[in-house]
Image (cartoon, rainbow, N blue to C red):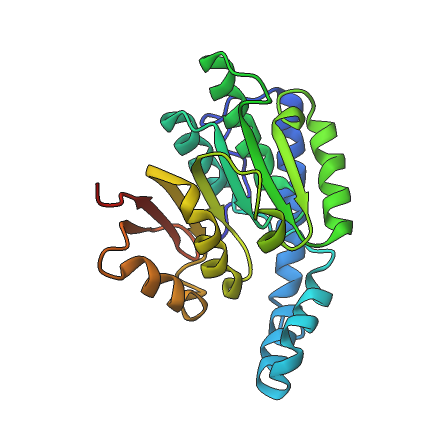
Length: 246
């Protein structure tokens, strides 16, 4: 079952931010429970895939337009901890939605930057969102979160295969939480900017295993430089490290 309780002992954040996260996780959970009903959105998408495959993406986008589908709270706490522990300063989030997980990423990057004496010009979460309505709402939540979050986010609105084409630093960490057909193109776009030890986390790799087939084929290929571990979180969570040959 998805975790909706903010892991307060794992995260250093102002109380106002913790309260905001709790509220947003609750909203996301309530939406997802409706999607899971027999007549809910997930089954509608599945039925469309069978009856009208060409229209599946459009139907999915229509249904998900106002949905959070936020990263589970325990997964988000892990991602925060990984970023803090590795000192990551440059993070890419592929799939921002309403920006809940972005808050965790920005907290971690901001705290790493402050510890390293870096400014917000030298450390960023490069967040990506295709839907303008979601991007607008995400900005409102980040503004509400305040100075521990908002200054550390560079939101790139539009098709991420275009918005991430340029102006990228060396990337320390990537969160892949997008429609699975976009995962491999995103990986191939970002990989030239990876360093030895770059970490990637991909969500729902067990429940969406069929959609991740090309991703696993890509990272398991001889000489790819990737090492991967499936973590036992709800739906599966993949922890991938990049160690190219010297």
